[in-house]
Length: 456
Image 1 (tube, helix red, strand yellow):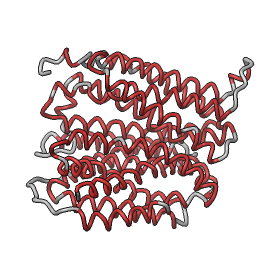
Image 2 (tube, rainbow, N blue to C red; image 1 turned 30 degrees about the horizontal axis):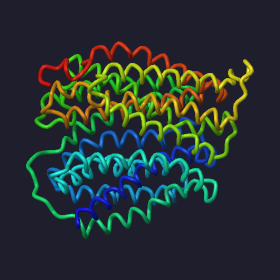
Image 3 (cartoon, rainbow, N blue to C red; image 1 turned 90 degrees about the horizontal axis):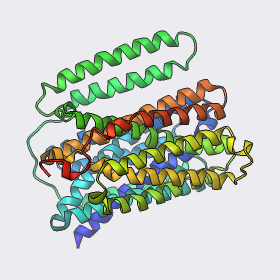
Image 4 (tube, one colour; image 1 turned 60 degrees about the vertical axis):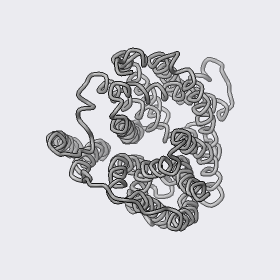
């Protein structure tokens, strides 16, 4: 019976992390206006969380094997809860960004160790347990925007952080009593590799931010971009020589894996990154309330669940390329529609639709596109190295997260420099639509179906 309580505890933690992610996006426009800061600086509230969670994720999985999943699980919950408390109390944007870093450490380390706990507690039904556990995340993405919109309107933006504190404390206390200690394994955590990767991505994002800071920005950006190149070169050199690298470069050396990760990077940018700005888009372009800006995200999450479930059922019959191609084209169409709506092009041709209905419909299309392509993109290339599933999955997730972080930084820069939100969002959405189309050749470099892979 205790294993079901344990499953409940880890599910509660995952629900908290999932709700918080979308709730903060809904609160983002109010955070920006309340501190009276530029979008470039405010964007770091989203960017730093994404970046830190990205690098922490593979480290936490390895640390769980070495130090025990209970310790890492407790640390992840504590970090996220403490980070939430400090974010709620942050007196200025600089400290809010710093405390979001702590939150990101907790969020990034939570999922791998929680998944490991679910697998170990249900060894006879591991696939079902992990499947049920991961299905909680999209449920949180449905609850998060609506709960976040209501909290912000009723209690202010700090409430989206306060709400995590009691939930986190309950989960920490329950985990302390329910989880068992485990035997440790030998190994090492690639902290040097993680540091080099984090520093290189951070320098690149800082270089983008410098472009919006006026005089001297080009020189500062050039120095930061050059530093990025040096650190990436050092990172590759180090990862090729260390015994347990944070990224197995062998996975990137073959053309199908390289194509898959390029595709995942772009999908992270177009689906995970820019979508964090949809509440700001809804508020600034269509003058929606905060609650409405959260509500319009709901159709996307519902459509993703339904479309991904249906695609998963027929994935063997359809193969990989067809769903990825359809999903890419639908995502491209979604981005074009968002860009056109930003300039009011629908109104100019006599189409008058309620703004909430309009944006909700476009978000529904985005969810269908993401739901169709995600199962195929997740499974493509895995059969090429069936004994390296964890490595392939970790690298894939990292590229998506980094794509999202870069997209947030670029979107903040464009919106800041564009002069007005309408043209800024038009440039962002149409630019990303063009990038999506350019990545279509990468789909044809990956296996068409499991039948194309000899090992399958």
